[in-house]
Length: 447
Ligand SMILES: [Zn+2]
Image (cartoon, rainbow, N blue to C red):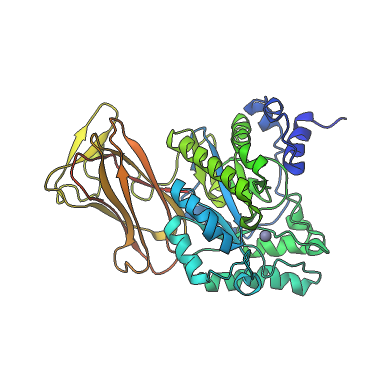
């Protein structure tokens, strides 16, 4: 029996990086994609309590209502990340999953190293920008003995958790190593690699999930285990970053998602320019309602056909039943209705509008604050998310100029809810200049 040509072309695409004729390759419908999914028992054994906590943190599957989800991963080299990539992530409000080694700040020296950073600085950056940190081994070196494997996988996880106490280390990202390839594991070429090799078993003993090198787009089935070991699309070469939109469109035809990866150390001027253009495109697609930008673990949790997505601010997310826990009356805002939606309107005497929420089981999850704003004449506003009792534990703050517009426009801010030490966060909107300001009920979505 000859192999399914669609499967071949998809593997060819993602494993060999051959992207010529991309548009022609992906004419398949969603039912074609479903036919490629082989049902049956898992080929690996998970640490169920870790998986349960992973799902609970995000409030269940992240439904995208038929939109493609994408994620970005940064492969350490934090000096260049801070210098070149962090400004893009902030400018376009795009979260990133940082693959970090537990010894990166001591062993990764030089201009392409990570020595300008520290664990406390990385943790703070993650909380304030909605980044997540994944275990990428202790040293990024091969582990030819079982004791070496324990050092690289188990001890590294423990060290990262100790060094980043406010971030859950739930994901393993296999480093590219030479030699024995972690005793034959070779980065996880198939889901069964996580059972067959000691490295795979240790990874799943210590982490809810792992990426790997299993070819194909990401399932977006709502079951994160369907994404175990999935591969990324590398963006280091400008030619790949320029074709980023084609990968997204191809994934969309299959009802699937894409994870993109870059090495900050490998990007030249043309590469950086191409990545910025691609991020700008992704942000514009998101803001137009055609794309979701999640973390890598959010992509694992995403559901293409689902529509329910956990919103920490409200299960209803509309002002239609009143202020819904917001301080609108006390702060002297006015609720108004249009055919499309209810919104809060700021008056001359209005104070800051806010709502406090318990984070509970959702501690440690990355969140996407999404606020529809409208200002017919344009105005300035500050958005904040902070720990009500201990503002030093979490304070995310951004000032935004809203251009004059007759329509509501989405503003996004990603952040991570601290895993420890914070119980209640406040989401607050403060007008900074005069003029009309209209706000539809904000959402703090799992991402
Ligand atoms: Zn790496």
